[in-house]
Image 1 (cartoon, rainbow, N blue to C red):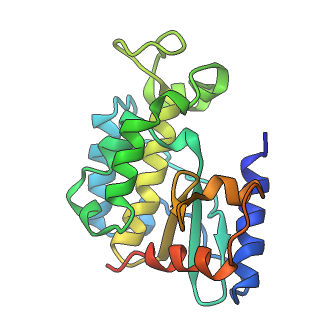
Image 2 (cartoon, rainbow, N blue to C red):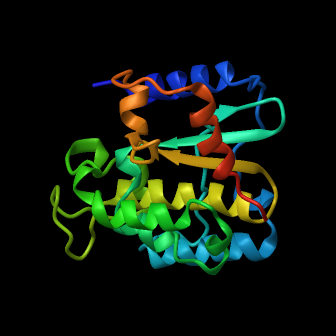
Length: 208
């Protein structure tokens, strides 16, 4: 299987062929860099997901791709779509995000591919944030701490886009370009003009 990093590099190569230029991007958002209302809502979301800390140190990872016009691109693979991500996409501010409707559908449709074993289900960092985990694949009292953590961190990046702090586009391996799934393009199972992939990215740029 192609690693997520390899798929992101392939997407970057395609976009460069379409005329995009690489650049160093900004730091990932933190609560203190979000507007106060957005930061408060992220904390509310953390608690709605079952967060157990009064003041969690929330630290999403760096942006997947960054380009010279200030555009940031996140490539979301299968682990990003499940019931917890669906919850984050239902916040009022998420209505302005151009990927909201597609991502809600993917979260409902593809949860079984979100990774129900081992560190994909839970790890020490996620358990510190959300407490105990249910057994792999079981949604009882505790569920999947790692899924919750990933969904919350995606929401923080979404909030930064929705409030205009960053210029962000999200695309998913489940998106289609000219009837061909983006995952197949990134696997090089199908060949489409770079400009058509760039058009998908441009359509997905959040406009606060």
